[in-house]
Length: 429
Ligand code: IMP
Image (cartoon, rainbow, N blue to C red):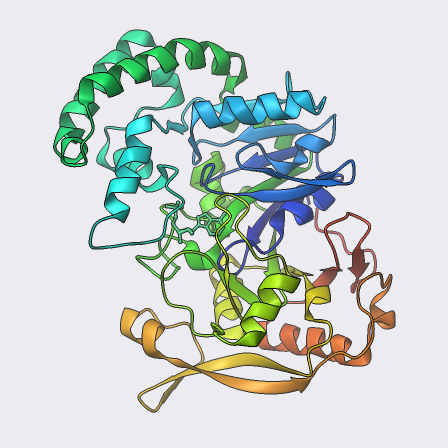
């Protein structure tokens, strides 16, 4: 097996950055297939945490190829800053970092529109990075791709058409179009030169890698419940983080995907607006937020926290065909007396074992909990599954049962070595 999709099974922030970093050691190529710099993957490098937003986490390994697939939306300014940041840390990206020529470009008007829409009557709680407006343009067939950005005349023509189309909303928001256009043209001169050496047909590169039996890891941003189709619509991001998204998002067929690995946090968090049945508004919610450092890597917003929601994760396992799971942040549940797990939802007397599509049910359903005894004893620093407190082992096994996929690995901290095998010598590639 040589290809693997890694995705988040909840609302993002499951700890994919660390997991991808851990797995990247075994991979040759690491490919992002959706989202943009709305994502934030916190990693540890030289004992210090730092966040990557666009460049795949595998970049920390000097010999790995890191690709941004066509399904990603790229803010060239943010990319330049991120690469400058990596260079400062002496992590070179030249010759091993590539962007698909078909990826769509985020321009300043996307970010402005994102902000204006957030002030309107449907507040999603977006990251305001211009993600939704950029994907909207792609779907409306007026988007500007990387390849278009590099062809000056094509770019100028598309820019004019886009500015005309967006004038009403921008002017309503108090934006001066002429000034905005000047800024975009000035940036374009500098940024098109900057990105040019990184641009490639990444779908062809992936095909070449697979033919040579290289190991290719497809990394999703966000999580299943933020998926445009399978998430808590409309409180979602504007792309498909589910495993299927890797095919149109990176340019390969489903028969080329060998394995799907889900990352799942030992409890649940979400950022932004939208339904969240297991949300805790009490001291336990605060405890999880503080213990887990649950503040957004991109926006710094405090995350909403709740108990483990098996309805959500079962749904994720199903819609992405997840074969294996990696559990993160179990160490953050030390010292809790009684732990709850949501096993179903209840609304107007009806029990929902499968994740409901109705926004009303998603919003008003109450969680049906089962309780377990908390873990006494230290979890942080434990080096094998058998050395975990018995109740922690029981919790892990119960989660597996409820969600329908085995937990192969448990992460007990941000560092690579803070990882415990449940399945001995598990092979995902
Ligand atoms: P957008 O992706 O900026 O349009 O935001 C849409 C929704 O997805 C909002 O609720 C965001 O908080 C959420 N979101 C986007 N990216 C992430 C992420 O990386 N982690 C968690 N939530 C995210």
